[in-house]
Structures are given as C-alpha cells and as structure tokens.
Length: 86
Image (tube, rainbow, N blue to C red; front, top):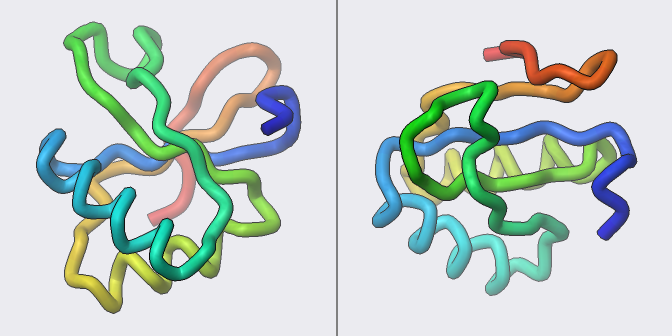
C-alpha cells in the first residue's frame, strides 16, 4: 500500500477489537492495513487500521455492521496527524 496516499487512521477500543476488525474486513475483501498507532496520536503501544480515503466509507460501514466502534479517526495533514471526522 502507498502510505503516502491520503488515508485515515482508525483507532479502536482495544487490540481485541483491532484483530476482530481485521477478520471482518478481510472476509469482505476490503482494503486496509494494520499499523502501529502513530506516536503523535498516542504514545502508548497499540495497533490501528490504516485506510486509504477511497475505501474509508466501505470500511466504516463494515465495522458498524459488525458492531465494532471506532474510538477516533485521524488523517495525516502537512506531515502531522490530526483528529478528523466522527
């Protein structure tokens, strides 16, 4: 995946939810990647979902259908991560 492409970082409640999300999204054939939570977002260790913007709506819908809540969304802008959307 092109990590320089416009993308969102989705933060979930726990690593358990991230792993469940991985299974849900893979089963649906959706495009995403697991990444360490950027230190600018949260200095604690953890994993997040990296989703290119063209795939974001499909990923968010699939997570919602599976009952997986997104805790926060971020996007990279001018080299920094900033909160984005709801």
